[in-house]
Length: 351
Figure (cartoon, one colour):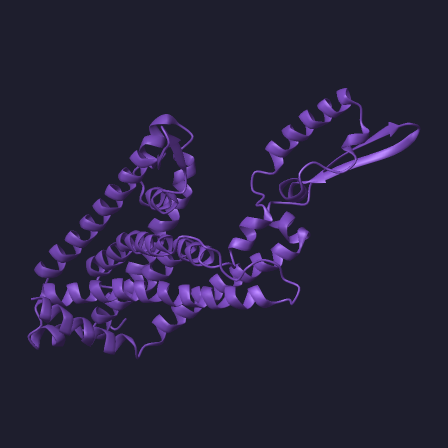
């Protein structure tokens, strides 16, 4: 059985590699991920871009009379993150300093939540952090591209009428569908590997230009985090592959499978913040696929010290995310196999 699925998977790859779509989708995500990395590199060297990524260029400032002279003290979100308190504050009286610091703290809490320190910006092009960041970043875009690829790969067989001849040549139905699922999962692994290699290469290039660049090309981070993030990303992709394959089998159409799957993806994005407004809606949102994928990818980033031992602060939420993703994957795949094994295969639909 395993040998048959492996043989069919290789056969499916030989067919798919001749099509333009997988290469175009790979190029799209690769270009977008590289653009994000180089934009972060530019922001690292440009305070205006840092303010733009934080949501604006707001400035907090006061003007005071000190010993008959006008003193202006100002700060931005970026300067507070990277330089600390603004210059000139020492010229104020202790009472006025306390008032200024209270006002500044309130302004920073309201306006600077999205501001990153330059050390974190540099992490976007310093391996291994850059690789982990790039892989986790694919989770925002990759599901859309996987939906397009998976539904097209299955649905086109119905449209071209190639499904019936393939099955009449002796390929078992469940082995045939399993080989397509295995191939799609392997392609997601390969695509993230390509993105990781491209990110590492870009990080090395960014580390040596311009000549006056400071810092190291690589930091002594945990390389195991790269592989953990990689595995978590692939696990997060699985339900979207199952969803698109299931819909393509149900509709026997590539376009319908893509449209319905993308519609579900977009509806979840819109519904999640609306449901979070109420307590009962929040309980529903806790079981949405997108919310649990985000929780799964972000899990493990927050740790606390308990009696000297570090443990995950969000362990229950992480377990729930793991189980919800698993449930969605199993349901979609079981439904796809159930329909595929029982439905008659018609001829070409001309799609």
